Length: 88
Image (cartoon, rainbow, N blue to C red):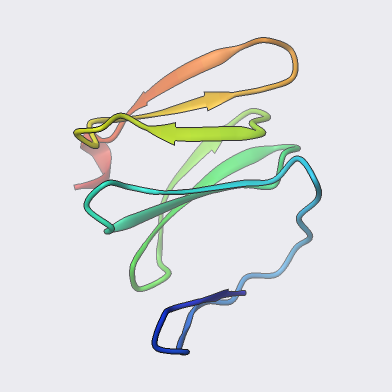
């Protein structure tokens, strides 16, 4: 569960997160990337609606400063850049 500053719930999702999990807000604050560290990266909008599902393990996430792409990294040394264009 993720809480907003005003105390409201942002989103409530099932599943478990572990020490390999990662979260990253887009620079404009409109999208949240969340990885469970095992199978996939989920991107949700501010309403908590799933807008993208990226395959593969990722335990680190970072947006480019302009928000045009999301970088994911995993323990196998793989770094991927995902364009954010499909999110708009």
